[in-house]
Image (cartoon, rainbow, N blue to C red):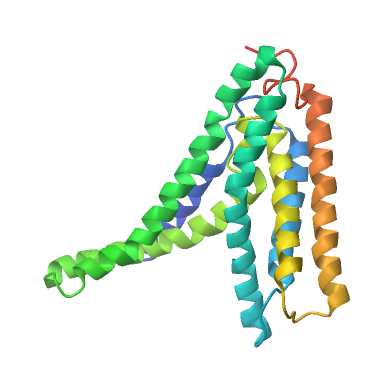
Length: 251
Protein backbone atom coordinates (compact mmCIF):
# COMPACT_ATOMS: atom_id res chain seq x y z
CA UNK A 1 0.00 0.00 0.00
CA UNK A 2 2.75 2.40 1.00
CA UNK A 3 4.69 1.57 -2.14
CA UNK A 4 1.69 2.53 -4.28
CA UNK A 5 1.57 5.91 -2.55
CA UNK A 6 5.32 6.57 -2.52
CA UNK A 7 5.98 5.58 -6.15
CA UNK A 8 4.24 8.59 -7.76
CA UNK A 9 5.77 10.89 -5.13
CA UNK A 10 9.28 9.62 -5.91
CA UNK A 11 8.58 9.76 -9.63
CA UNK A 12 7.42 13.39 -9.45
CA UNK A 13 10.54 14.40 -7.49
CA UNK A 14 12.86 12.54 -9.87
CA UNK A 15 11.15 13.96 -12.95
CA UNK A 16 11.67 17.53 -11.74
CA UNK A 17 15.37 16.81 -11.18
CA UNK A 18 15.70 15.32 -14.65
CA UNK A 19 13.99 18.24 -16.40
CA UNK A 20 15.33 21.21 -14.46
CA UNK A 21 18.80 20.12 -13.38
CA UNK A 22 21.48 21.46 -15.78
CA UNK A 23 23.55 19.06 -17.84
CA UNK A 24 26.59 21.37 -17.48
CA UNK A 25 27.22 21.26 -21.22
CA UNK A 26 29.71 24.15 -21.17
CA UNK A 27 31.81 23.36 -18.11
CA UNK A 28 31.88 20.86 -15.23
CA UNK A 29 29.93 21.84 -12.10
CA UNK A 30 31.78 24.04 -9.62
CA UNK A 31 30.88 23.62 -5.94
CA UNK A 32 31.51 27.27 -5.09
CA UNK A 33 29.31 28.52 -7.92
CA UNK A 34 26.64 25.97 -6.95
CA UNK A 35 26.76 27.14 -3.31
CA UNK A 36 26.31 30.76 -4.40
CA UNK A 37 23.32 29.70 -6.50
CA UNK A 38 21.79 27.73 -3.63
CA UNK A 39 22.22 30.66 -1.23
CA UNK A 40 20.75 33.06 -3.80
CA UNK A 41 17.74 30.78 -4.24
CA UNK A 42 17.23 30.34 -0.51
CA UNK A 43 17.18 34.10 0.00
CA UNK A 44 14.77 34.56 -2.91
CA UNK A 45 12.36 31.91 -1.66
CA UNK A 46 12.68 33.35 1.84
CA UNK A 47 11.49 36.71 0.56
CA UNK A 48 8.53 35.02 -1.09
CA UNK A 49 7.64 33.35 2.20
CA UNK A 50 8.18 36.25 4.60
CA UNK A 51 7.28 39.51 2.87
CA UNK A 52 3.54 40.15 2.69
CA UNK A 53 1.95 42.17 -0.12
CA UNK A 54 -1.45 43.65 -0.90
CA UNK A 55 -3.97 42.04 1.41
CA UNK A 56 -5.11 41.86 5.00
CA UNK A 57 -6.74 39.26 7.21
CA UNK A 58 -5.42 36.09 8.72
CA UNK A 59 -1.60 36.18 8.90
CA UNK A 60 -0.97 32.56 7.95
CA UNK A 61 -3.44 32.69 5.08
CA UNK A 62 -1.92 35.97 3.96
CA UNK A 63 1.61 34.56 4.03
CA UNK A 64 0.60 31.56 1.93
CA UNK A 65 -1.30 33.73 -0.54
CA UNK A 66 1.55 36.24 -0.76
CA UNK A 67 4.13 33.50 -1.30
CA UNK A 68 2.14 31.93 -4.13
CA UNK A 69 1.51 35.38 -5.61
CA UNK A 70 5.20 36.24 -5.63
CA UNK A 71 6.29 32.88 -6.99
CA UNK A 72 3.73 33.18 -9.78
CA UNK A 73 4.87 36.74 -10.53
CA UNK A 74 8.53 35.66 -10.52
CA UNK A 75 7.76 32.84 -12.95
CA UNK A 76 5.83 35.18 -15.24
CA UNK A 77 8.64 37.73 -15.23
CA UNK A 78 11.34 35.05 -15.65
CA UNK A 79 10.17 34.11 -19.15
CA UNK A 80 10.56 37.54 -20.80
CA UNK A 81 13.59 38.34 -18.61
CA UNK A 82 15.37 35.19 -19.74
CA UNK A 83 14.51 35.79 -23.40
CA UNK A 84 15.70 39.40 -23.25
CA UNK A 85 18.88 38.43 -21.37
CA UNK A 86 19.67 35.75 -23.97
CA UNK A 87 19.15 38.23 -26.82
CA UNK A 88 21.34 40.87 -25.12
CA UNK A 89 24.14 38.37 -24.38
CA UNK A 90 24.14 37.11 -27.98
CA UNK A 91 24.17 40.69 -29.29
CA UNK A 92 27.02 41.64 -26.94
CA UNK A 93 29.15 38.64 -27.92
CA UNK A 94 32.07 39.17 -30.26
CA UNK A 95 31.06 38.41 -33.82
CA UNK A 96 33.47 35.46 -34.05
CA UNK A 97 31.64 33.61 -31.25
CA UNK A 98 28.10 34.93 -31.75
CA UNK A 99 26.81 31.99 -33.79
CA UNK A 100 28.01 29.34 -31.30
CA UNK A 101 26.62 31.38 -28.40
CA UNK A 102 23.23 31.64 -30.11
CA UNK A 103 23.18 27.86 -30.67
CA UNK A 104 23.83 27.24 -26.97
CA UNK A 105 20.73 29.24 -26.06
CA UNK A 106 18.66 26.39 -27.52
CA UNK A 107 19.10 24.48 -24.24
CA UNK A 108 17.43 27.01 -21.89
CA UNK A 109 14.82 27.66 -24.59
CA UNK A 110 13.99 23.95 -24.62
CA UNK A 111 13.57 23.95 -20.84
CA UNK A 112 11.26 26.97 -21.08
CA UNK A 113 9.19 25.04 -23.61
CA UNK A 114 8.96 22.12 -21.19
CA UNK A 115 7.67 24.52 -18.51
CA UNK A 116 4.97 25.81 -20.85
CA UNK A 117 3.96 22.24 -21.74
CA UNK A 118 3.83 21.34 -18.03
CA UNK A 119 1.57 24.26 -17.20
CA UNK A 120 -0.72 23.33 -20.10
CA UNK A 121 -0.88 19.70 -18.91
CA UNK A 122 -1.67 20.80 -15.37
CA UNK A 123 -4.46 23.05 -16.63
CA UNK A 124 -5.89 20.21 -18.73
CA UNK A 125 -6.56 17.94 -15.73
CA UNK A 126 -9.77 19.63 -14.50
CA UNK A 127 -11.00 19.80 -18.10
CA UNK A 128 -10.51 16.05 -18.51
CA UNK A 129 -12.22 15.40 -15.18
CA UNK A 130 -15.24 17.48 -16.16
CA UNK A 131 -15.40 15.63 -19.49
CA UNK A 132 -15.67 12.25 -17.79
CA UNK A 133 -17.83 13.49 -14.93
CA UNK A 134 -21.18 11.76 -15.09
CA UNK A 135 -20.63 10.48 -18.63
CA UNK A 136 -18.61 7.33 -17.98
CA UNK A 137 -19.36 4.00 -16.42
CA UNK A 138 -18.09 2.96 -12.99
CA UNK A 139 -15.02 1.19 -14.36
CA UNK A 140 -13.87 4.16 -16.41
CA UNK A 141 -14.70 6.47 -13.52
CA UNK A 142 -12.56 4.37 -11.18
CA UNK A 143 -9.66 4.41 -13.64
CA UNK A 144 -9.90 8.19 -13.97
CA UNK A 145 -10.06 8.57 -10.17
CA UNK A 146 -6.94 6.43 -9.68
CA UNK A 147 -5.13 8.38 -12.41
CA UNK A 148 -6.07 11.72 -10.80
CA UNK A 149 -4.93 10.55 -7.36
CA UNK A 150 -1.60 9.33 -8.79
CA UNK A 151 -1.17 12.59 -10.68
CA UNK A 152 -1.88 14.61 -7.54
CA UNK A 153 0.61 12.58 -5.49
CA UNK A 154 3.25 13.12 -8.18
CA UNK A 155 2.57 16.78 -8.94
CA UNK A 156 3.04 18.11 -5.38
CA UNK A 157 6.69 16.97 -4.95
CA UNK A 158 7.28 17.79 -8.61
CA UNK A 159 6.15 21.41 -8.13
CA UNK A 160 8.13 21.82 -4.90
CA UNK A 161 11.34 20.53 -6.44
CA UNK A 162 10.75 22.29 -9.76
CA UNK A 163 10.13 25.65 -8.03
CA UNK A 164 13.49 25.42 -6.27
CA UNK A 165 15.45 24.21 -9.32
CA UNK A 166 13.89 26.71 -11.74
CA UNK A 167 14.58 29.58 -9.32
CA UNK A 168 18.15 28.37 -8.84
CA UNK A 169 19.04 27.53 -12.43
CA UNK A 170 16.53 29.68 -14.38
CA UNK A 171 15.58 27.13 -17.04
CA UNK A 172 19.04 25.53 -17.00
CA UNK A 173 20.55 28.85 -18.06
CA UNK A 174 24.07 27.60 -17.33
CA UNK A 175 23.76 25.28 -20.34
CA UNK A 176 23.31 28.36 -22.52
CA UNK A 177 25.83 30.75 -20.95
CA UNK A 178 27.60 30.65 -17.58
CA UNK A 179 26.56 34.25 -16.83
CA UNK A 180 22.94 33.93 -17.93
CA UNK A 181 21.60 32.51 -14.64
CA UNK A 182 22.99 35.21 -12.31
CA UNK A 183 21.85 37.91 -14.76
CA UNK A 184 18.27 36.64 -14.88
CA UNK A 185 18.21 36.24 -11.08
CA UNK A 186 19.07 39.90 -10.55
CA UNK A 187 16.59 41.16 -13.15
CA UNK A 188 13.70 39.04 -11.85
CA UNK A 189 14.40 39.86 -8.19
CA UNK A 190 14.45 43.63 -8.63
CA UNK A 191 11.51 43.62 -11.05
CA UNK A 192 9.35 41.73 -8.54
CA UNK A 193 10.48 44.11 -5.76
CA UNK A 194 9.62 47.21 -7.80
CA UNK A 195 6.20 45.83 -8.72
CA UNK A 196 5.56 44.95 -5.08
CA UNK A 197 6.58 48.40 -3.82
CA UNK A 198 4.53 50.30 -6.39
CA UNK A 199 1.32 48.25 -6.18
CA UNK A 200 0.92 47.31 -2.52
CA UNK A 201 -1.81 48.88 -0.41
CA UNK A 202 -1.44 47.30 3.03
CA UNK A 203 1.04 44.98 4.69
CA UNK A 204 0.78 42.69 7.70
CA UNK A 205 4.38 43.48 8.69
CA UNK A 206 5.72 46.76 10.09
CA UNK A 207 6.99 48.95 7.24
CA UNK A 208 10.60 48.93 8.46
CA UNK A 209 10.72 45.13 8.68
CA UNK A 210 8.90 44.76 5.38
CA UNK A 211 11.31 47.03 3.50
CA UNK A 212 14.34 45.48 5.19
CA UNK A 213 13.27 41.99 4.12
CA UNK A 214 12.42 43.06 0.60
CA UNK A 215 15.27 45.44 -0.26
CA UNK A 216 17.84 43.67 1.91
CA UNK A 217 16.94 40.38 0.29
CA UNK A 218 17.23 41.87 -3.19
CA UNK A 219 20.62 43.38 -2.36
CA UNK A 220 21.80 40.03 -0.95
CA UNK A 221 20.67 38.18 -4.07
CA UNK A 222 22.46 40.75 -6.24
CA UNK A 223 25.71 40.37 -4.28
CA UNK A 224 25.52 36.56 -4.46
CA UNK A 225 24.78 36.70 -8.19
CA UNK A 226 27.77 38.99 -8.77
CA UNK A 227 29.99 36.64 -6.77
CA UNK A 228 28.61 33.71 -8.79
CA UNK A 229 29.41 35.48 -12.06
CA UNK A 230 32.84 36.58 -10.84
CA UNK A 231 33.70 33.01 -9.90
CA UNK A 232 32.65 31.81 -13.37
CA UNK A 233 34.82 34.52 -14.92
CA UNK A 234 37.76 33.68 -12.67
CA UNK A 235 37.67 29.97 -13.30
CA UNK A 236 36.54 29.81 -16.93
CA UNK A 237 37.43 33.22 -18.35
CA UNK A 238 33.83 33.83 -19.44
CA UNK A 239 32.55 37.37 -20.07
CA UNK A 240 29.54 38.80 -21.86
CA UNK A 241 31.80 39.47 -24.85
CA UNK A 242 33.72 36.19 -24.95
CA UNK A 243 30.83 33.92 -25.93
CA UNK A 244 29.26 30.96 -24.17
CA UNK A 245 32.20 28.56 -24.19
CA UNK A 246 34.86 28.77 -21.46
CA UNK A 247 38.41 29.71 -22.31
CA UNK A 248 40.24 26.80 -23.92
CA UNK A 249 37.06 24.78 -24.48
CA UNK A 250 35.58 26.61 -27.47
CA UNK A 251 34.56 24.28 -30.31
